[in-house]
Image 1 (cartoon, rainbow, N blue to C red):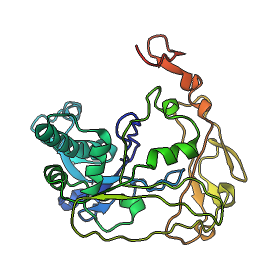
Image 2 (image 1 turned 45 degrees about the horizontal axis):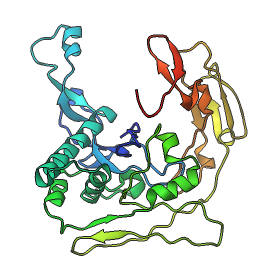
Image 3 (image 1 turned 90 degrees about the vertical axis):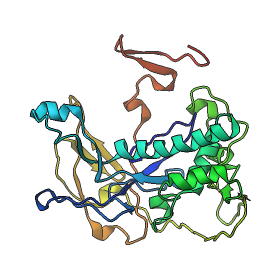
Image 4 (image 1 turned 135 degrees about the horizontal axis):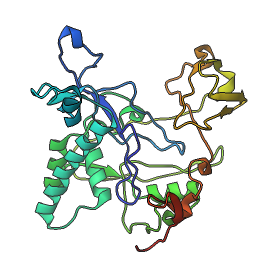
Length: 317
């Protein structure tokens, strides 16, 4: 998804947006791409930790969808002209992926009589995704394919690739316990995903991780090596600032933004592309103190009625 649908308690996943072609009158022509094209605004990986994201793609740009009722009421057009419209973004990619997931879960329930584990659902969706020709940091495992995903549940001989070491490796780098960032949950007794993560290792040292393969058939294995070529402080590549009232200053790798008295604020920056290496992957990272946006911290939760924060009680209501 363009935004992070990141429920660590259930299925940690990240869904990118792909683009469907639409045909419109010339007066309404929009810059849609070809089928299965990853749209420009879809977020790319890796994460700050270095894990590969997104996990999968789903239709989420310039595709038809049911129109919003309030548009018809707002414009006073009740003849059905707004019954469907072009739609896109997180709000489309997420339900498209969720719909495929529902078919998979329902098939599993009918077949086994039990609930499908979250890790198995994610493994099936990723292993059955269709490769659309982009790199793994743009498409993840590929475009969600509901038919192939359901077929994988019905036929256990279809190959699945996964690793059981992901959670342990991520926790070893993050530091806090699993309960810390899931608000009290415990590490599942079984968890695997179709990816590996190697924690920080010293220069010159090596690490070995295991990928398990079940089923039968022929698989192609490709090696990938990511190398950091260079880094540059943000202030050294800014050529000009288009919103001076918002940007209070810039020094080295620290950008100072004045958002006082504003419900929201934009900071438009023009970057000097000649100072950015022409590499395959270029990532811009923005890090801010957590307490700036959540004064209560993880020990508190927002109380809508009191307009204040109160202690969060773990383990029950």
